[in-house]
Length: 217
Length: 217
DNA sequence: TAGATTGTTAATCGATTAACAATC
DNA sequence: TAGATTGTTAATCGATTAACAATC
Image (cartoon, rainbow over the protein chains, first blue to last red):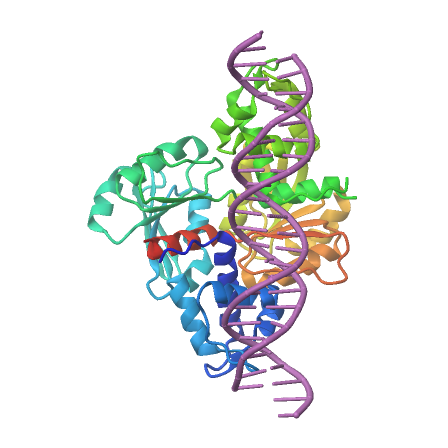
């Protein structure tokens, strides 16, 4: 599939999916774009535009979209059934918070291991929803990834000064997708081909609020 | 000030500011938009466009922007000198991670207290950069805010099912700006006037990575 | 039938990129 | 002077909103 997708579209698709989950309607029920607007706050025009863009054309005039079918389409786009196993680099508070992030479960995304270099963290085991997740030493990462070829995604939650090094290591060991939560903009080395990197600047929204509070008219 | 500002502009302004911090140049040195492009990855055209939009016109042809002056402008826009005291609702891992988030310090943003309802959390004291931050019971929030009128901003890091209630409480007690980190889209009640709310969906970037990994060509 | 809702196109809006005269 | 860099305008690009024919 060649279609480029923006973070905004992914976000809205997520809203629709979560809205359906929340509604918990019978599978043969229908929801209209208008109904989705009510729940998600996304305008019905935008909803239909998104569906059109993504090739979802299962609507019935006067009724809307059958819950079951829509679920399937959204699941397909979000790869919910395939899910994903991810690792977290950095087992500080942020890394651990991400590991237990509830919404990841709904998306079938599982944190399977954390890595750190701090003695006092390595060896600890987190319990998340009954599953045990171990914190390993970073120098065992290469071995770990060789034994777990299906892991392609890493979340980076290390301190700012360790982030670029960690990124290089991840790429070297074959990770294909990285979300950087460290407060620094990382860039992919030119040599990195087919690697996906997103910088997630956690504080941004707060800075906007601060701006608005101080600059409000 | 009436000028609307987008999250993207705020983000880039933050980049510029952090880039200057990192460069740590003498105050009378100059940086050009080209130089800022190198460090931040934002194109020099965008840099100048942003400065133009925000009324920063301190550049000298052939030289660029004097570090000291640019610092002052960026500080002014980001209200760095004023800073902000904020509270965190929810003292789980996410709430605690936010409380110790390093980058907030650079922005002169201080978490001064956390609130929760869990017995085992209430009364605990976090140590962040030498400062002590207490976890109080949520039912002491009203009193706390009455005694600390300067606190206008709250970060919401409670579980999904508690988020809407917590938002209502915050508004009732006079909070003016809220960043919601709970995995749910909150909406302001119609009665809420002059309240700023931003939903910060922490997982989004990961979902995009997952999409790209599975749909890459 | 009349009303509601889709799929799709067109119009608008906003954000980014490009261009360039001014000038140090 | 020639080259570099600004401030600003214009062109382009992308995303959202509006409109509406089709039709159940």
